[in-house]
Length: 475
Image (tube, rainbow, N blue to C red; front, side):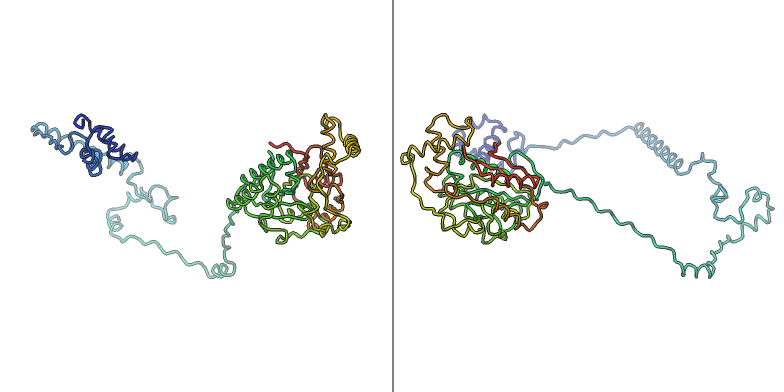
């Protein structure tokens, strides 16, 4: 079969084996050739290239073209043609170099125009030259050419004048600075674009964000938005990520604001991704990087909750602050030290976190009816479920009868307005220099925040030219 293959087929067989890394024995078996023939083609391909497969390779010969002798007539015509062409070329070159058609050609440089002559005091007339006698003409020709007199030095008075008042030197004009284009100062978040170069992401990491199904979904969606915004930050931007929970707990990704390079963005993304959807895992993963003790921010006593997180975020001097919070008052009393209540006007000794886990069956009917009427009186009927059992469950849960972990909202009311006053009084910058703050609040169904917390939050965000959004719809 090898004799039937053309040179192109042999080349393809060898190249196919080399490019696709096919063993020699499989290639030989596929095309029905021997290994010796394949090896011979392979060696010739390496040595001589693709030419070895041409049938006439190695048998080339040089064809010598026979030159016939020219006749005498042809030689004569060729010589005449060359002489005519050479004479024409010489004539054209002389005509270009010496323009005989110019009327002023041959008159000399001093006879064209007296205004262009360097000798202005004794102009020469061509008619007078022709009328000279023969002897004078002979004497004129034999005389040596006159040497032009050297220019006289300027008077001493002019020199003294120049020395006294030298000519002013030319001043070079300074080059104007080339304007450098401003780097991009746009940050995207929650489907919008915001102007700024320094941004801080503030995330509520309390256990209440994973208490119910709806809050878990909102927390997951908010993490996704922050991940997308951080990943799309320009390398010219700066950012930081702060997690806060309970009353006075916060951890930050960096001790100062960080450049948005690939490494820092990866740390932030890994931190957000590790928070998970389990409360125990959340408690462990949120306490990473820089704790509040290592940060420069030292909020005043009495600044708690949302205001404590905002105070920490503002300490990094950003242009933008994006805040995501949940049901803040529902923090666990057992996780808060008594020292965090200082400055709030509360007596920590009267706050006891000990309470046994309650169940619906252990609650009396009177409490159920009372809780149901209370919820119906404060909520719009269109926002309540249809069955009484569902209403009882919501009312008892909001009042704290069904929670395994006893939260502060079931026993005490934090004076949020007083905490807000502490925040404003402890700020080191004026209200006009507060960064643009955008607050997003995600609450579980039928849950509300106290007016003493919502109103100052809305006022703070609007005064900073930001926004306040309750239960946002995620893109």
